[in-house]
Amino acid sequence: MLDSDGYLLTCSRYIELNPVRAGMVKDPAEYSWSSYRHNALGKEDRLIIPHASYKALGSDNVSRRLKYHALFEKHIPAADIEAIRAATNKAWVLGDDRFKAKVEKMMARQVQPKSRGGDRRSELFKKKGNINRA
Image 1 (cartoon, helix red, strand yellow):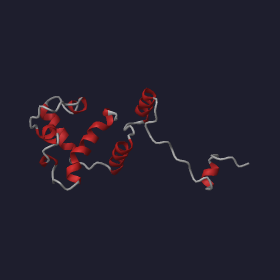
Image 2: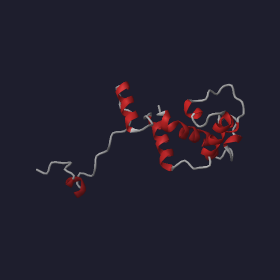
Image 3: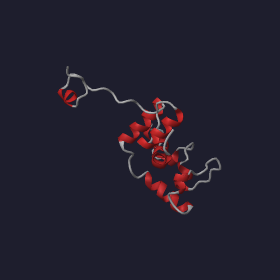
Image 4: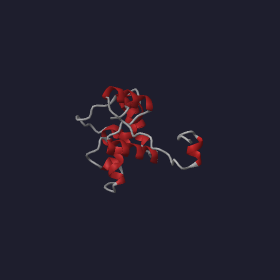
């Protein structure tokens, strides 16, 4: 589950670049099972229904395709790739803290990893008042 407002286009890029990262093709347009050719190049595909985030890229099909294509000129930051992989592999929610809290409340289940404890013996941990010193 992901917050489409902030993450859908990044996840779309991640998915459509998977065959490139895997060395199957050099360009996402070469992979026939991808929506890239429809979204970036305008090749008709009746199976694809444009998402609101895609539609918001422009006022018409040509401007949307140009902006979508331009998204692929930039690399996806490594932190975003790691967040997508972690959310996918561990069934976490992908979104900002507000979105995660909303989903957690709706689903009545944990949707993100809990913070890990610190090194209880370190001076920094003790200074922050995280353990009883008595």
